[in-house]
Length: 275
Ligand code: DO4
Ligand code: MG
Image (cartoon, rainbow, N blue to C red; front, top):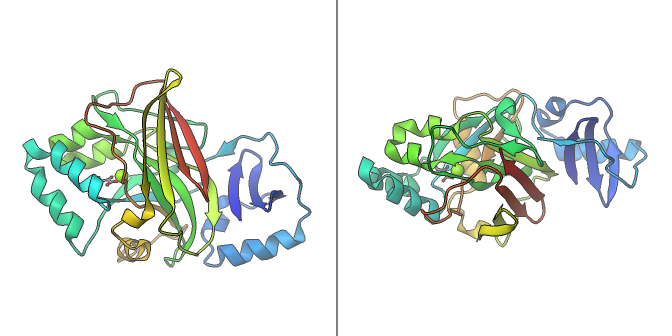
């Protein structure tokens, strides 16, 4: 079952049928501990239609904060050690990759987050920018994983690499995040064979493509959530990006007009243009 937030309200897709949830706000849904069960029961009371309709699909977020985990794939560890080598970065990225405590950082709010079809941004003062395609957990206030969506953790690698204390500036700015297209509502873990695929098109041709299997994610999503909720409350629930395992070569930087396509088969495709 998938949950979409559209300009005309929330819609559930199940078995190619669409159930409009009327005025039920996304915040009401994402704050529920029993989201999968609640929606399964609720749609029994609605007559479905065969089309999603013309309404614009919006990022599936209300008042939730978006957090992110870092250096959770070996590829990310290596890329970060390389970019930060002149800032003494080799050691601490290596350490956090193998430490018990994961790296978790604040990433975004709804106002900085694009939905599918929206525009993401590169910072005006950055010279090396990349998308980071990440499986993103939908987390209830008590820490239950109630769904999965696709996230793009847009990052300014030159700023992050100059000094790790600049991480919030490299990660949090207007248009620095995308989520969507919808939420796969399910508490079952995704299979390890699930692929995250990234394609970046520039002027009609593929400039970069890559993929990674979830089997390469070093951390258990449930443990990431457990750390995030330690002494930290999320009354509306929250999103947690799980880190990137795909890093374009160092010669690559995003440009205005690039189209970023991230596909995770059971969830869908998140496509955004760079403003
Ligand atoms: O440590 C810096 C950020 C790491 C990150 O965003 C990732 O690994 O995805
Ligand atoms: Mg990331």
